[in-house]
Length: 86
Image (cartoon, rainbow, N blue to C red; front, side):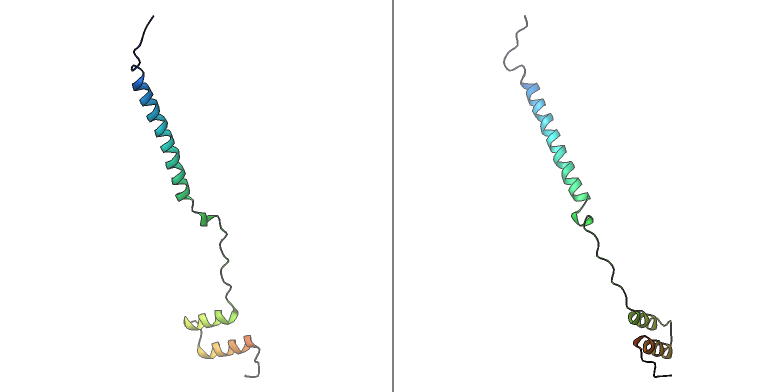
């Protein structure tokens, strides 16, 4: 028969405890990484972009210099329904 002293298994108990501690720490670190990698605002649907009205589009094009002041006024009057001007 082989007899062991009571303290002979102590190193293995310490290593086993450290191994479980490392596993738990790894799971916690993995959870923290997953939470930070996938923020909660990614799962919220994005608000739709504001739809630009025809008058806004016309004003933007005039501001960019794509049309003259006469073209802008004529188009603006047409969009507003004011066709009394020639």
